[in-house]
Image (cartoon, rainbow, N blue to C red):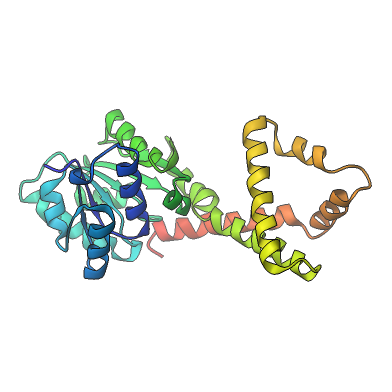
Length: 273
């Protein structure tokens, strides 16, 4: 028996598999991955040295812990297929779903009310080992199942367990979609710097190092953001002038409204909208 299977072999599945192997949580020989695209299967086999298949049910038959990494639009078909195999005799599987917006009740509607399900919201930086994930377990899943899922996602960054599944919509808006907000802000900074005369390549380089340095100071100093802003913003100085413009434009309100919009969209996806 394999120790872990993947249904869906996209970028996130690849990142997780790579992290598990690189961190020696599991071996390549412990994994089996399915995907509909032959080119994708070949790429996974070449890069990770794992077993691949076009047959989702082969994954179910070979592994007892299954990560479902398919798009929300296709999950009903996948769960129906999986359920048919479970009814045929497969027992005691743990299902870990990263399908965005798909609630545990919907998954259990296919797999059974007592199914062992852990729903996870990861994010794209898992692809470079710097991911942030939050997870919630179903009533049928155990503390050991939760611990196993945390171990999987901590292989590619950090992960936390939550009690209230409703919080995953806010998590989706914060850390799930959050990298795009950072990229948008970084692009705006670099564009503005280029408009001020700094060469584009240098503007991007300086922006990235500024973000990296600011993140490290915030993480390692233990000081809150407001305090660190005061450290940088001298009265009457350049930073204060920039911060005043942010305030005049309603920067904090824009961020709040954007995250609320993302959370609302996550709730809509959960309802099948």
